[in-house]
Image (cartoon, rainbow, N blue to C red):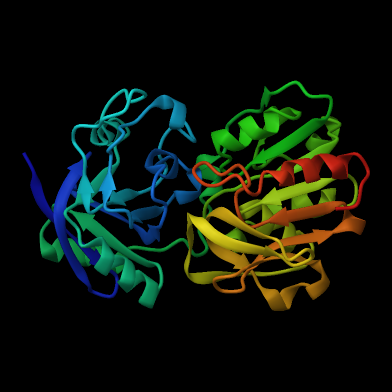
Length: 359
């Protein structure tokens, strides 16, 4: 049995489709519509905490062809507001699969929609930017009203929603790293844990509490929402600057830039996918990267000599380093789940920084 539905964006644009997954009592879900260009890894994308508050439109036409497995979860649950696809595959085929994607979405109370012209929707978001809106099985009037009142991610603190509630440890290396959980992915913890003894701490942990753990390095994780809404987190990073080696990625990169006196801005439609080319400004080397963010560091807010990496699609700052402050960061995801592994050398660079080498 299927239920007809529709998407209504805040600018009034309408897309028709079929409601799938979990349908709430209201029949409506609101959030900020973005698009992701990855060709695989839909489960990792859906369970990435960085998507809190957002409705993910997948540009790849089929979702669910290889099912789902707990091994691919990047968090304890999906944090996205909803999922939009051209087609769902109802009968998955893969030896790792424990069930279909739609059953997974129902289990985790995530509404989805299929039968959508995702090419048209993606082109609209590319032209007009990420837009708030609503989708579901309600009447056109109800959906339009919900879309008009929907909010995007600006000025929203989603980190408090997704961060862990208590500290935990992973790994057993000789170096001890304290990792701030702003929405950290499971693969990120695994990559750190394969090299270091890692203590993952809640986002609100104070600088004094971090020092009590006597870390050799501090890691600033990925996470959702607007970094400008998180000045208290940037203040903690500022307190730690110069006292311990720091490595930040994604939201952690933005918070590090803020701690250094920089500012952030919202991109038109963000970077969401696993095929973004990035150039190392110092060596000229090109790496293909996995990315998921709607905000970036403003180029006019930091010294040009800090910039280490640049996005070749739009020249957005993708990395910074300040050796005298013992810190560096990148906008993209070196753990790449999903995505290429070109950037995993950055974990070695973090270890080198902890060993006293300039990076």
